[in-house]
Structure formats: structure tokens, C-alpha cells
Image 1 (tube, rainbow, N blue to C red):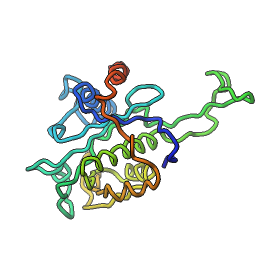
Image 2: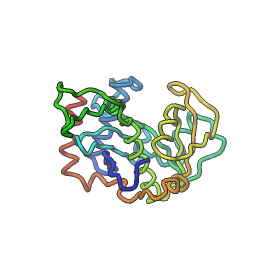
Image 3: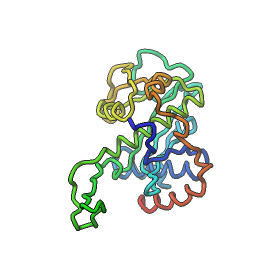
Image 4: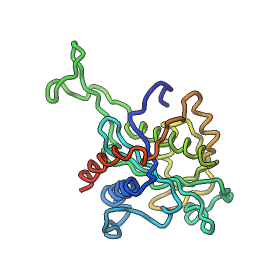
Length: 246
């Protein structure tokens, strides 16, 4: 967990207008169609991965403050009046999710964001060595994935508290659960047996209020912003993403 005074290297935006939602879907296309092969790219000729649950969801984007490019996306799906949550169509839960619940899904981290950071070697003068001149991976830095997940989960908690969402559900792997628990001190409670959905997946539940309390003095204020409030910056960063995807 980051100390309260630390400014995250990642900014989280809620995609609340057409341009940012387009970025969100393009990033999902890159990850699920081009990088992991989970989805058939031919099914999305416009280069935007989407499904029938997106109309029920709040869409999140994560951007590197230093580079200005998009590195991750996720969504919080709210219950459909008739279908409930997506998880109920795949997994057998030991209880029915209540109305004030949401499901975390479509967690997408671009390939470069899953790599470790190599810290540069600094000379006696304290200056960073130039590339090719004493620049070597002396020791490993933190996982980028952990920092991204930390920012994204904090934003999800803040958004959920702002919108009366009391619990999260997610269908995921044990390895991702370990990453989430390292990134943020949240308790993921198994709520049903494992099922097969693109590999073995287990349904979990997170109590939002309990997770927010576990942050202690780390503030949630400012954990996310609306993309419509960052419109100019979003326009510039969209170009970065389009070049990467293309």
C-alpha cells in the first residue's frame, strides 16, 4: 500500500463521455484481441471490444502521469433488472447478490504495464547514467501491475462509496487474487466453487465498506476524476493509444 503522502504515478478516469469510452473499448481490444487472444478480433471490425453488459457499466481508464498514455482499463457492471450480474450466468454462487452490488470485469493491462521496472544506475554525482553508459538493471523495482491495481482499486472504492455500491463480485484466478491482495489490503471472500471459464475461475466477493476501512488513513478523495473534466488531456492521450494499437 502506498503511504498517504505518496502521489500515485497513475491517474484513474471514469469514461463518462463518448471519446473516453472509445479509448476504453480500444484498450480492451488491444488486450483481449491482440495480446491475449481471448476474443476474436474479427468480431470487432471497428477495433473496439465490447459486449452486452457495457450499457450497465461504469468504465475506468488508467493513465501514466509521466508518459501520458493509457495502461489499463476495467469496468464495474451494475445489476441488470432481469439478468442480474454477468457472474451468475457462469458461476454457481452460494447466495444471490443484493441490488447494491457490482461486478468487476474486463480488467485489461497492456503488455508493457505487466513488466517490471528496472531502476537506472546512478553515479557518484547522483546523475542518472545515459542509455548504454552504465545503465544496467542493478535491482528490480516494484511491479507496475501492483501500482496500477492500487490506483484502480482505490478509484473503484471511491466510486462505489459515491454511488451506493456495497459489494463487488469478480470471477478470477487465484494468481490475480494474490496480486490484488498485495496491491491493496482487501479481503476477497470465495462465494462459490471453481468453474471453467477460459481456464479455472473462482467467484469472489469484496465488502466495499470493509475494504475502504482497511486503507486506514490513506484518503480516497481524488482517487478518480471524470474524463469529461480532463477532455483536453484525453484528446492528446487518445493519439498515443491509437499509435500503440495500430
